Image (tube, rainbow, N blue to C red; front, top):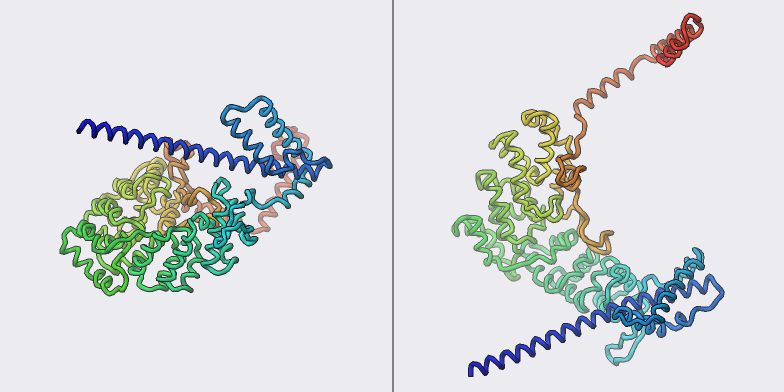
Length: 565
């Protein structure tokens, strides 16, 4: 019986594997057909456009293949499929070559004027008009609404490679119109952030419902039209994030202000405050200390009528900074701290405690510079380097110059130094070669920070996040993501000799020397004008006298005239 069971299981498993393989092959064939159809549509539109240009430039009629769009599309699709399968006969291959050469000749004959005239008549984006749009009640075909054309053009320009059918996008646009009650509002949102049209139908309605539930209808509408980015998220993210954020910020007005400036907060992960007790104990060292610090937050949360959920970084941040007031002060400065997970703070906190030698000193640094807890290695020059390693590099570069205790004091006064990372040791190493010793570097510390441009980098490090603004297709010219952060002159990426070459970067002239040179030039420039004129007259008389003296040879007179001039 066991052998029979094993044989039956093996046969059933083999049949399941065969069905899976057949399903994957069918899916691959369908995706290949979709890709071919997309290419054929583009080719058919191009052929029709070239035909129109030829008609404008030449009095001859269109070729028969261009005159009928359906015939052209089917013929081109057949040719493309056969060519990809390697079964294209020589006559068909010659036909494709002839079409390509004819397109080139048409472009040459059309000229600039005809091309411009026809381009004005063509649609803004090349699309295949849909015939699948149906009435939701009768199931009968219906025409495409005229007001949807701007949204479709915006979508096609942003993602020309998209294979989403047009009737699906139209249904999504109609859902946005039903949600906000106006065609103009729907087109405005789609123009500002066309990512809304990539979400399934009904997502915008659900997101707006949750925003209205926690903020009110009018405030939610203001938030949406100020930052349409919030409508391009998922409804489940907004449903979980809104009560957690409201428990932290307290009022609808304050939460609305935060969402207008930081729309990415709607994707904040959340969980129950009491689930974070292990994290709080890990930071405080014992359950008693953790409860002592977390008691005000628990009392505040107990009075909330909403669920007891909070952002994932909120409980650990309270324990790290030592009080509820300090945590809210840091959150008001850097709201993106709530998007981090609590255990992501532990590596940076441990490194700070090691470098500073005490928990209190590390806490004071984080109160002054809470941005040190953010995870930003992807936007920095030294991408991939952890923020904890940034701090270690900076501290170890300063320790040979000032000693351990003086370095700790300087870092405590200016915690933005810890955000420099690899740039500070590279700049200090170059300064040592220029000045000759670490003592000279320590004596001219402030001057070196100015001459190397590190002061500007420290100012940039203190700016509130997001320093480059949030990214959205409608408001950013960058399609690949957030633009690169301000790159320091001492980063390996900007090294003139390459990443692995000797450290080179910005090195301005000494401000003291430049000031002294300016004073000397000023003294010369304030001489009396009469003395200058008298000196020039004496020089001209000597030149004339030498020129009339026959005892002076030509070489002497030429040299004297050159010196006087």
